[in-house]
Image 1 (cartoon, rainbow, N blue to C red):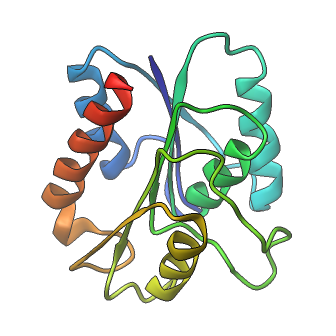
Image 2: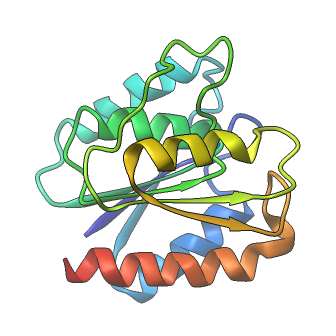
Amino acid sequence: MKIYFSHGKESGPWGNKIRRLAAIARERACEVESVDYTDLEDPDLRVERLLDVLKDEDDSFILVGSSMGGYVALLASEQVHARAVFLLAPAIYILGYKQQNHFANHENTEIIHGWFDEVIPPEHSIQFAKEAGCTLHLISGDHRLSSSIETVENLFRLFLDKALSA
């Protein structure tokens, strides 16, 4: 199983969160790839890049995205068949973003969002989770979720265990 990570607007492909979650994935014998979007500001061009990376993927895969990377992973999942999707404070329902209507392509979508997110209101994830009927974890933390990284890691372990056994 391969896991593709999509980073946020102001981070890089191997930031702290992705490194920590990738280590958990490797513990479960998963391959990991973190796509580099640092040269692209436009979220929809980032979606195109991820779809280009995925076009030759023959095996099952999981998409993980944080912030703008959450938007990227979610939109890509609407066009490809990912085994599961894990979103961290996804940048959905953001003014200026081309895509405003979102749907979960399958039941294996989970979201983590911090109650005190100052960048993307948690209400955006609540709205999406309600419409999609997917799992939403609202936890103590801000947009970066740094203060709650252990909780994020534990939820990711549970998510992966479920996705890998499906």
